[in-house]
Image 1 (cartoon, protein in one colour):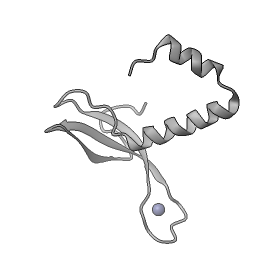
Image 2 (spheres, helix red, strand yellow):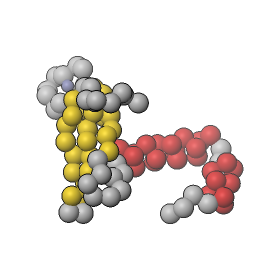
Image 3 (tube, rainbow, N blue to C red):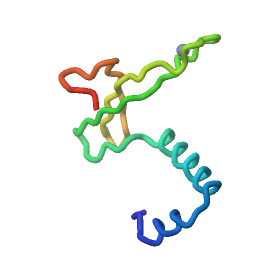
Image 4 (tube, helix red, strand yellow):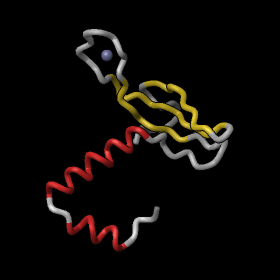
Length: 91
Ligand SMILES: [Zn+2]
């Protein structure tokens, strides 16, 4: 869906309560959705915080760590890269 002028106008008209709800919604969507990896063969990199899943861990979430994302057979695949992005400066 394109971000239309109408949509922007509606968001601008929202009060703080609605804006906070919208912010929470968007944050949730960003966490759930796979990151954009437009075309196959194209790899994009993203930093993420990771939960180790260990009981009693007080340092969760860990990171940020770099992950590589790419499209393969219509699916988004990901692979752990590490704390540093090799050959590239962190954004
Ligand atoms: Zn942990």
